[in-house]
Amino acid sequence: MHRTPDRQAPSLTFTAALLASALALTPVLTTPAQAFFFGGGGGRIVYDPQNHAESILSAARALEQINNQIAQLQNEARMLVNQAQNLARLPQSSLARLQGAVGETQKLLSDAESLAFDVAAIETAFAEDYGTAASRGTFDASLAGARSRWETSVASFKDALRVQAGVVGNIEDARSQMDTLVRQSQDAVGALQAAQAGNQLLALQSAQLADLTAVIAAQNRAVALEAARAASAEAQGRENLARFLDYGAGYTPGTVRLFGN
Image (cartoon, rainbow, N blue to C red):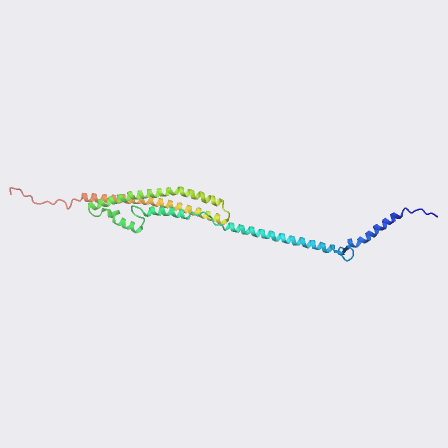
């Protein structure tokens, strides 16, 4: 008896193969720690998915730590650079020029041709030549004293003009220093340079105040000496008038004798 071939056999075979494959893959999906063996004979390679995943995760964590350490080192290096900039000194120093300018003004004051800025010398001069002392002595001595006081007043005005000229000469140099210091203060790379520039600007201002004080002192000195000279001249004038009007003891009558007696 001839049998008809069963056409459903290949389909059943394919289905059975799929089921067998699913059963074979089920332990892999449900148990990641299971190892796989590749290759045949004695040269098999063992592959553990869970161990591989843990190794990748450990490597990622180690790389993250290394990146964090690199970032920390970069921040520390940047901090050191900023600290170095904050501690950088200002390359410009105006101290020598300022001291030189103040020294020149002081020299002009000390080289005064008239009465110097000295308390003891002023007291001696006024005790001997000014005030009521101008009216003492002979006429020739009074005349010499008046001339000496006039020369002192003229010299004091000359000294004041010299000090003023010296201070005016310092203005251009002060302007140049101010421009340099302001520019360096604006270009300062750190806090120390900015502070030093500010301190030098204050020193420049102090030098200008010293010049102004010198001018005021010299001018007031000249005015005071001229006022003292005028007061002494007035005292001397009163004494000269009193001497001129002094006729002695006056007229004393006596006995008149004629030539015939």
